[in-house]
Length: 332
Image (cartoon, rainbow, N blue to C red; front, side, top):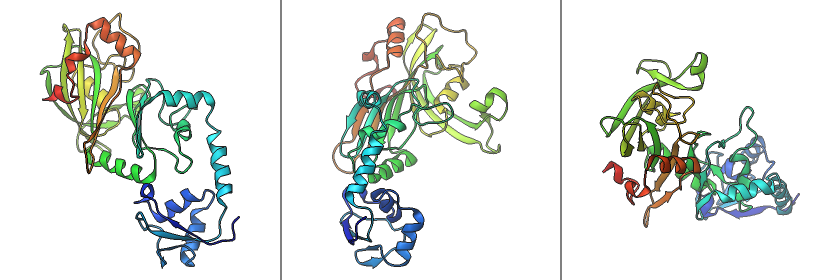
């Protein structure tokens, strides 16, 4: 423990964070109750003034910190936490890296790997994120992909980036394009799907979304733009999909709704006869993502196809050049 009062400057990466959350990230082991007590008694101050726990910090502000664990104590905790990631998982998650800068990390998540833990799920992306940390902030998930969906998964390096990316996902300023291979060919070949959906409550439907009307309790409106890039006769189609809303299983639900279920989807299989000779696995891939920038050019990230979709593309005769260089070209 340190007997000294500290004055710590808020960094760029920390700007926008709530004071209480900033404090607990900086000093692991300090509880919310302790932070509130420090604030009530004036032991924590911002630029010399009393502050509330909900105050949003700005870069350059000075936070007065009462005697707390030393930096060596904190580093010891961080090193112990980092050791929780095995050498195998450290190497595994680094192989997924397709983009990184001072604010974000982008991974190309493989199909079959969960983003977060749950019942009977011990190995997941969130459990490996300490391997990508810089010792100051733990990287944070800002969105999700289904276990069986492959492709771009964004990670925030620090609290400021997490807040900004979270807002982009909420206001839909961050644009996403998925690729899918579906059974049959949608007609028309380009359009927009709008529907109401709700989580099922009985039997097998408890694990999937089902059709609903606006008045149903818990119903959500979902909107997806789609375009056919290429076809294999009338057997299958390569699709570009852009979700304008962010509902659970939205793309999978919508493609089954228009009777063109995504190949390899166990939850939304549709009623068409199964296609033989194609690779196993869900054929849905988060292909491209554009992150708007306040200054400079927007960041465009593209994730290579997983091996099972590469194999299916080869079998069906789909060529990557058919999609064009711009991820949004199929919608134009």
